Length: 73
Image (cartoon, rainbow, N blue to C red; front, top):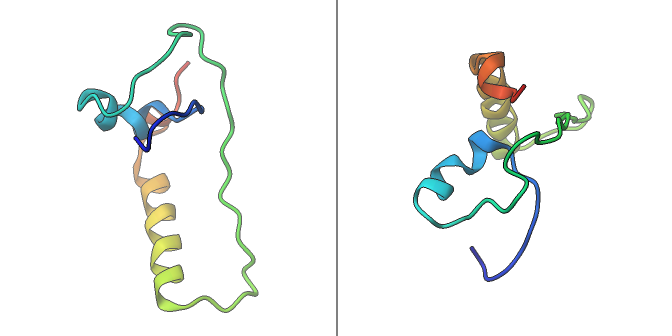
């Protein structure tokens, strides 16, 4: 959206921007590779309110999104 770039994005993350024609999928359209994504943080680190809220939002989104929506096999 900033000009030009190519990178792998999760389908559900890019879906709205693809629908709104802000992003375009380039070939490969079939047989996309599976990529594991991990959320990692140091539990001993003192987080400010914004950091704690962001982390909780991410974890809640993962926990409440069914696995079949998060995978593409």
